[in-house]
Image (cartoon, rainbow, N blue to C red; front, side, top):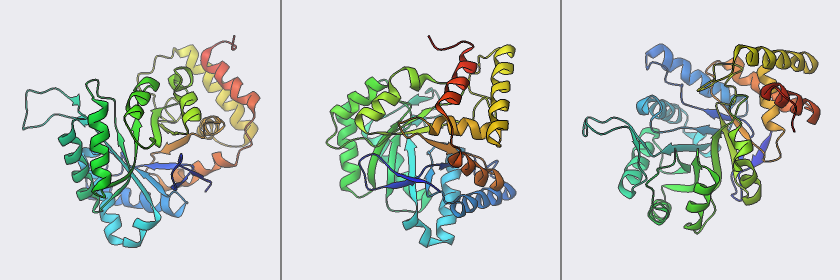
Length: 305
């Protein structure tokens, strides 16, 4: 597995990151066993970076991963473990409160404690703010990050789903650089190409991590607005390129992301061992600039201006 350095840190990540959102399944014994098999298949395939969030399966995904670490304690020192928090879902404690974002000091401190407890570890390699809290106070977050670091609970920090202005605002209050911005990038959603997110990553040395990279190819995209004609045109181009490169269409999508000079790290979230291993084929493709633009053209329905 190819590896790259994460931003300015000493952390070296596998170019493909394993996403743990679905590893607990419906939390049945069979699904949990399947999730453990997926984790071990990813490790055997060379993935060393595992992405979590406190809300994945209501915390069950972290608990399951913690069981794997308990069964094989030596793995902890070999892996990069990332988790996210800041989305505050329904709670019996406040039944009338809406789902909301919360970067307040105590909520983030409690969230990290919960993550560490579920994973059964003492320290996270990276902690990310899951989605921007419109009410966040940059200095309060900076002070909270410093407290988490001073207590030895988090080594490095990053963000997820932040726009460039939000990254800049938070960074202005921090003594150390943020390491990553995790954003949705796929054939349907190319906002990060257009809103300056990937430009900022290159300029400031952040590592972009792509969630839902296969949306619209291997599974439906979130908020899909493509017409039937759009889908047909895109599918035909994927098929043409897959034939040319002797791979599957979803490998082409990964290669398209990997081609970008910002060094995007796609998250692979499949729980099928064969698919987890197969994703590495995208790293082997000598994907051309011309095909990159052909796929963009098919996606947009017109040539670039």
